[in-house]
Amino acid sequence: MPQYLTAALYKFVSLPDYQALQAPILAKCQQHHIKGTLLLAEEGINGTIAGLAEDIQQVLHYLKHDALFQQRFADLEHKESYADEHPFYRMKVKLKKEIVTMGVPSVSPTKQVGTYVKPQDWNALISDPDVILLDTRNDYEVHIGTFKNAVDPKTTTFREFPEFVAKNLDKTKNKKVAMFCTGGIRCEKASSFMMAQGFEEVYHLQGGILKYLETVPEEESLWQGECFVFDQRVGVKHGLAVGNYDQCYACRMPLSNEELQSPQYVAGISCPHCYDKISAEKRAALMERQKQVQLAKKRGETHIGEKQKK
Image (cartoon, rainbow, N blue to C red; front, top):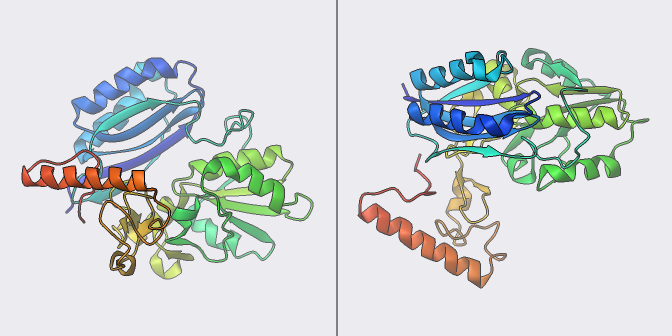
């Protein structure tokens, strides 16, 4: 069985003292040899961490029960998956203005949010012809998989979502709106935004695509393709098995086996999606970085940021 447990977690909760939580959380993760990234903001916590199962459980227990957190993470939920190799290189706990950046300060899921829909009830909802189904993720994520009949907003960042809504949706016509994202955090915040805009029936997938792929049998699934994840696995399939995609270091686009065979793909430097968009200066920098990666390999070391092979 793969030895590394990955835990994806988030919770919208008031953390006025979030800056003071950074150091103790980082220390606890390092104590248990955990790697990954956690984001802290006044609106809550978000991130993905990985390590040996017993160490992950120790950190989760600490977050849920230590007096420092005043029970604010007591009901913290997470999604689990396993990998043969460690999906991260180091541990970071970052302070942010938002745990998921929309850029609309007035939006707060702790004050107003749409209806949570459990994975087992999701198929029935999105099969309703009166429901408009929105993928709240970015274009490079949608590229490798999405739900059947979902609308792709073609955003490059979550900041563009409010503009998409303003230009393409009408609260008087789009009576029922259902949204989804990777782990549930973006669609939860998007649902809060939609409610504030006057949309009355707003639904979002509880636990996100990851919980859906974990719990809904593949033969009953309406998911098509793979789900992009922000670590070295790149994509996951039903049952959260590691997928078949690699990733371009230069532009971060997920790459299929066919794209990896393209003459425009050069490991660490370019791919068919960015080959004609890279400046001479950036190409030179990427080539130098790739050179350092290769030199580190010859020395038997791992270069920080180097992509592990599946």
